[in-house]
Length: 271
Image 1 (tube, one colour):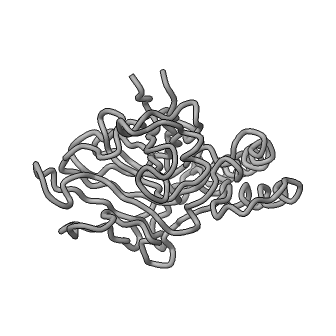
Image 2: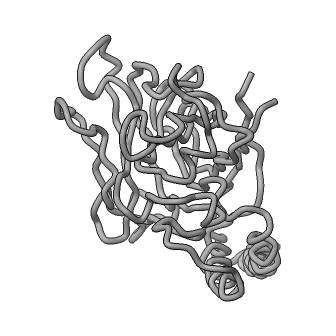
Image 3: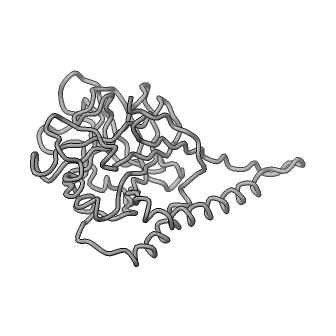
């Protein structure tokens, strides 16, 4: 079984901004590469566009394409989020919950860039549980080591906002089809990055009637780059916790504190 349940962790949203800055400083001492992908790459949809996340790579156009919604993100007013919809039809475009990105900023050598996972905020607003995976393929079918898929993160139906991580570590990836031969070869030359619902590891995914909100898709660094991130992130988390405590109403009354958003994290990995 390659599915992990979510577990509660502190809010990471504020920590991300500071942590990415800390990562940029840390990367000054790391040998560079010509790869387009970089640790800390972040799509937050704040420009009001899908930032090149599309449901189809050629072929029929989906009747329910990805759209960006204002004020729908975990930050509330002013926070944009990407909405994915699938119809659950037996066949046809839009039947599966799948979204792809082939923009150069998500392509390239993930191994050289030190990227071994994705972190993203998700909210399942549909009636069915989802098993969310990340998948990678080369620039052309058969051009590299084939299609590979991560272990799944369980996103319960009608969930609130959660933070999930999906592994792209080569030793944890699962074959996406029968042509998959070498995960490291694919990760060294990624041409397609995909998010999908799939009950079993596979590139295509399952038909399902569903809606999923997504925000803050971030490329995670491998452990040697992440050590500095952890220090900065923990520091900001502590500051955020102190601020939340100060906003709590006193016994004598006062303005109620704004409800803090819980952000469980589901960590992909073979069990």
